[in-house]
Length: 524
Ligand code: ACM
Image 1: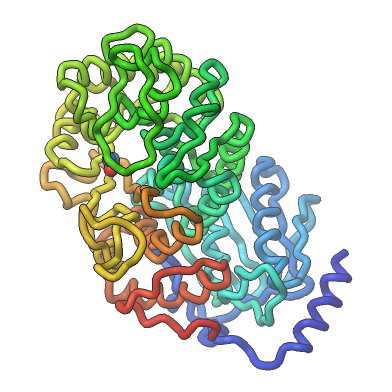
Image 2: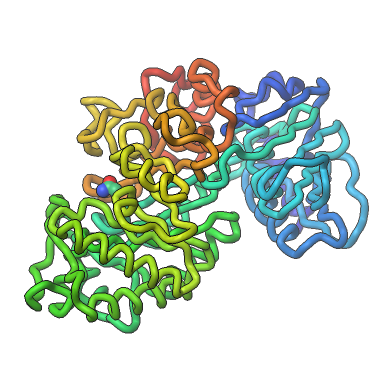
C-alpha cells in the first residue's frame, strides 16, 4: 500500500510544475500563522520535512485514544501529501522525518488540552498530558504545513515545518459555537462538517439548539409526535427534519473523537411552538397551536402550572441525557415574554431540578438567573449583563456570548445579504476585538467558563450560507477563548488570518472576504 502511495506521489509531483506559495520562510517557527496564537514559540532555525519514509509513531504503553488520534492525523495528511503515513504502535523507534505522539509530563501546566511540540530536523515529537491535548496539538501540526495539506487530492510539497518548540494551552476551558438546527434544519453531515471546523481551531464545545417554535429536531421515543409533527416545519415553510436518536448519538461520537462536547438545548418555556402544536396537553387551555414558520419570538409558552408539562420535560431530559456524555443540559429560558415572571421562576426552578435528577448540570440563557440557580449552573450571557451579574451573585459561572460581538448570525455590514442586524453589524475586527474578562465590569475572569459564538438560522437555508457567516469570524472567537488577551492584537491577528484564506479555500469554505484583511487572490 505504502509503495503505491509513493509511486502515485512521484507521478503527481512530477506532473506539477512550480511550487505553491507558502513554502517560503520554513525555517522560522516564530513566523507561523497558527490560529489560535500559541502561548510560547521558540525557533531553532532548521527545517523538518515529511517524506515518503515518514510515519506516525505512538509511544508504547499509550492509551488507545492516542493511536486513534494518530489515525486522525494520518487521515488528514495522506490525501494531500500522498505520502502514505502509517500509524506504528509496535514500539519501534521513530527515524528521520517521523512524527512521535506521546502522553507524558512535558514540564508542568499543560493541563487537559495543552501540548508541547518539539520539532527537530529529525523528528517531530508531540507530547501532552491528556489525549485531548494531543488532538489539539495535531491541529497545530496541520497549520504549520502549507495550506494544500487541507486538500483531499494530492498537492505538490515540499511538506516542511520549521524547527523549534511550541508550548501551548488554552486560557478558557469552554470554547465553542452554537448551531441552531431549528429555524432551518441541518442534517448530520452538515453538523459533522461544522465539528471539523471547530476542531481545526481547537474549539471544544458544540451547543446544538434542538428545539424552537419552528421545529423540534430530536427524536423523543416517549413523545413521538414531537418529530412526526413538530419536526416537519421550518422557517419559510421548508420540509424541516430531525435527528433520530441514532443520528444524534453518531454526532456525539464524532464530536467525541475530536474532543468536542455536545451541549443539547431544549429551549423552554417559550420558543416551544413546535411542541405545543404537537401535543395539545402542553398548552394552557389544552388546545394544540398551529405550526409556525415565521420568525417572531416570545409568543409561545408551555403551561408552567401543569404536571403534564413536567412529566413531558422529565421524559425529554431523561432520553437526551442518556445519549449525551457531556456535563451540561441547556434549558434555554430566553425571551419568555408570554410567561408571567412568577410562573417563569417556578418553571426554571423545577426544570433545573429535573436536569440535576438526570445527572446533568444546568446551563441556560441569561434570563435563567432570575430564578434560584442550582449549584453548578452556568449562565450564558447574550443580552442583559444585569442578568449575568445576578447569576454571578448566586455563585454561578458565566459563558460569554454577547450578542453585539459574538452572534455569528449578525451581518458583517449593511451590504451583507444573509443574516440579521438587530444586535449589531459585526465585522471581522469587531468579532475579534473584545475581551471576555473585561466586557462586563462586575464579571471577572474567574467567574467566566469561556466563550461561545451562536449561529442562529432564521436566514440561512444551506450549510454554504452558514459557512459564509461563520467564516472568517470563527477563528477569531477560537483565539479569544484560547490565547491570553495580552497576546492578542487585531493588527497582528489580521495578518495570520489572511494566511488562512487559502486554507479555507482548500477546505471548500466560501468565506466572507472582509476588506479589512489582505487576502491572497483566490486560487493563488
Ligand atoms: C437568544 O438569542 N434569544 C438567546
